Each structure stands twice: as C-alpha cells, then as structure tokens.
Image 1 (tube, one colour):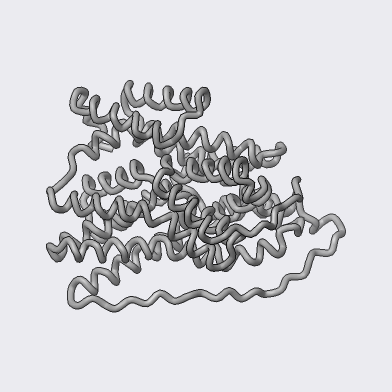
Image 2 (cartoon, one colour):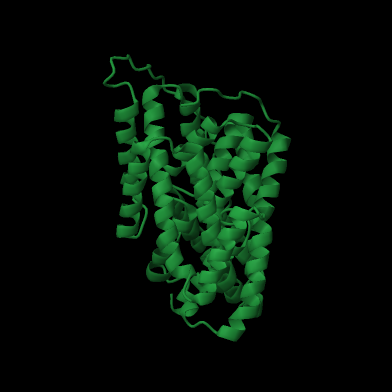
Amino acid sequence: METDKTTQRVPIRELVKYYLRLGLLGFGGPVALVGQMERELVGEKKWLTKEEMREGIAVCQSLPGPLAIQVGIWISYIRGGFWGAWAGGWAFILPNFVIVAALGALYVHFGGLPWVTAIFYGVSPAVIALILHSCYRLTKLGMKDWLEWALAAAAFVITVAVQAEVALVFIGCGIVGLLYYGSLFRGRKAASTTSLMVGVPLVASSAAPGALGSLLGQLLAFFLKAGSLTFGSGLVIVPFLEKGLVQQMHWLNEHDFLVAVAMGMISPGPVVITATFVGYLVAARLTGSLLDGFWGSITSTIGIFLPSFLLILIVAPILVRYRTNPNVQGFIKGAYAAAIGTILGACVLLGKIAIGDWLTVLVALASLVVLFRWKVSNPLLVAATAIIGLIAFPLLKPEWVFVK
C-alpha cells in the first residue's frame, strides 16, 4: 500500500474556483464526478495522492449521503481546512442549484417542459456509460488483491438481489478488511485514540408564515432524513425519494418525479440536486408563487446536503490523524471494495430505467467506445446524446420511457 502523502495547503479561493467549474461542467453522476476529480486533482494538479483519494472515496461511500459532494468536501477539508470544506462544498453545489431552480421556475410557469423527457431518453444511457467508465478508473486506483475483488463481487450480488444499496454491506466489508489487513491479530499494539471535537455551525432561518412555513419545515425534515439515512450514491437515493415524495407525502405524481430525476441526471454537478427541483415544484404549486418556490428550493437543497458537511467534518479530522493505523487502513480497503461492487450493482438497476430499446443500447455502447477510445469530455458527450434524444424521441415515440 502506498504511504506517501501530500501536505500542501491549497488556497480557499483555488478550491472555490475549481469546484465552481466542476459544478458547472461536471456531468455523469457521482461516479463520473469522482472519476473526474481523481483525474484532475491526482493526475493533473497533484493536490492529493492516490492513497488520499482512495481513502476519501472509501470513507464517503461508507457514510450516508451523496458520494460526489462528500468526496468534494473531503478533498476541500484536507487541503483547505474547516472553512475550505464549507467554501469548496457549497461552491460545488451553487452552479447546479442556480440552473435547476431556474428550470423549476420555467417548468411551473409553462406547465411542463416536454423536451425534458426527450433529453432524458438520449442522455440516460450515456450516463450509464459514464458510470462504467469512471468505475473502471476507480478499480485501477484502488483494487489490489483477491480479497478486494471478492468483497466487490459480494457487494455487487447483494445490491442487485435486494435492488438497493445496503448500509450493512459497507460496514461488513470494512470489518472483513480490518480483520484481514489490520493488526488486531498480528501482535501489534493498536494506536490509542483521542476524542476530537469539531465545531458544527448552526443554520438558522426565519420561519415563513402560514402554510408555506409549515411546508418548508416538512421539506427540510424530509430532505435532512434523506441525506442522513440513505447510504450510497446520489443515483441510488432515487428510490428513497420516490417512496417518500410520491407514495407517502403525495407531493408529486410519477410523471413529475421522473422529470425531477431527469433534471438531476442531465444537469451538471451532484445528481441529488433533484431535491432543488422538487422543493421548487412543491412550494410554488402550494402557494401559486414563483418566489415561494425559490424558498422551497433553498430549503430542500440545504436539507439534502447539510448532513454531508457535518458527517465529513466530524469523521475527516479523526481519519486524517489516524489514517496510518493498519486497522483504519484495513477497514477502508474493505469499504472501498464494497463501494466498487455497489456502484456496479446500481449501474445494473439504473440500466433497467435508462435502456429500453435498440437506440438506447446503441447510445450506451457507442458512449463506452468513445470514452475508452477517444476520452471525450463529459459535457461534450452529454450534449451530443441530448441532441440525439431531442431528434429521436418524437420519431420513435418510445412508450417504455413513460412506463418505467
């Protein structure tokens, strides 16, 4: 295992600049975004080592919440400290928030955006290809021996079998890694641990009057729960959101929910920005005010992302201090292998939604060839497949898009 590490401090303004750009131009979902960070920050900018990137991915995948934003916060923390984590994390979110909130306003004002489904039809199979390509890069980054591959295979089978990511899979694989790679049974004295307190800023907001205030409270509570209790990447948080938003709260119907998911997939940045679109729709429709929709989008965005900041800022300082402990390293190796397996399993589950006819199969395969052969940028691939969707959808009229 590599033990070298970089200790350079990156100015907060540089972190903000990088994550604003990534939030504006980064497409393809959490795994693609993590792959892009690995390529640019490890390979090009040399802001962190492969080992630091690997640790960050394993830790973030083992925590509830969206993977991409947590990795971004992790990197911002170890290179920019406490305030760097807040600045880099929210810079990552801001461009996507502005785009999706604006699309929410247009959607409500015009009573729907028919072209969204057409774009979703073309882009979604390309997103599957982006995930597979990024997962390949992540396996090269961290998969080293037979046990990691065995744990990844087990995590893949479990994910596909239960049709969801299971939190216990990460914990179980981490424990296996700890036992196999760690020092508990090797006669070494484990390093002592010291409790580390991390200041957690409080977010206060003035309560809005009447029905809107009550709704904003419900939105905040729902998305705080989603961000705190749902393990896995932003892509796999979708089933949890569908159950709560459509089946339990009845805030959205199936069509509106699919549109919200499409917004998260076709827009840059973290996929769970779907929460911004949902918050806008729910609040604007309740009050009939586009301004109230804006407050709904802000509330939902804070709710879905705030737990990620708090979890990383609590866990990261401890891991930075004790990352050389063989037991910590063993747990991380096991959890990293589980991350690879569950990402591939999630890809299978998402493929059932994204691929349903000959054209989407062709788009997915062609996207894979383009990514591996010519290394086309993510925004260019997304733009090209969006055009394909806009042209092909009205011609083919694929009914399965509306059924799934």
